[in-house]
Length: 286
Image 1 (cartoon, rainbow, N blue to C red):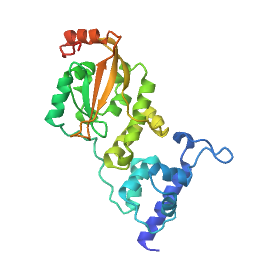
Image 2: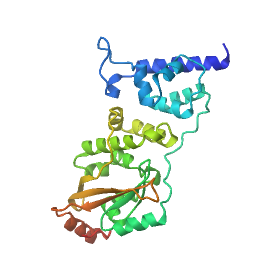
Image 3: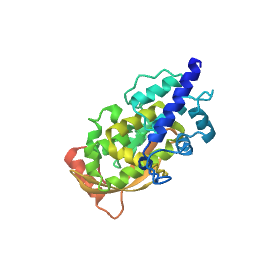
Image 4: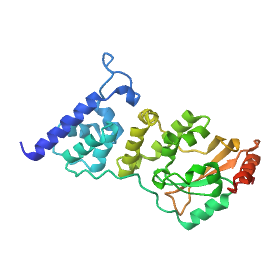
């Protein structure tokens, strides 16, 4: 047996072993057979990883095929491999494991995007990247989330803030519903980036630091990102209700502009005006 054949055989054996050890409840899947609670079917992991069942079967059989790094990354994420195991399968597939990068800082937004955000004041507004990094914001958003300034740029990510920042969690009266909804919306948008380094790093980081994220991610919920009413319990302004509006700039389609407009029939405008006077952040009624 050649060295290449030995690596392909070990890769297939390793993936088959990890697939057999996977806990079905972690994927929101029912038991199979006589109540067996572990083990994924080949078609299940193939579906999650975006490959055909035939191709995945060949991979486990050690056939002479050439999987891309993106496919190996996607399979590793969906089998919940550790970083060491992930590097191992990359090596078996012929790829040199990359040094684990830190979460990246988003690129600066174009000047006219910041101008738009500032023009939306007194409505809190921010710009979101495809990986849901908070790339820019206006003074009203800073008043709503003062912690955005002291959060390291590499951690200004909407999913990181929702699942890991206790200040943000305390402001969301329906945290479980909101966090699950945001994650389902992120997943709906991430299909084309599954297996990409930023996506893989973000998911692995959150899986390692938030059991609640891991459970929600394994539920595989998918939902379109929509405008809707949002509620906050601000430590200074109290109960706030906004209509969330999402805008996609035609000339910068990779960014999403999200603005919170004070909801009609509430005293949110008055409350944010009082917050403006108390903090000097510039939030005032429209």
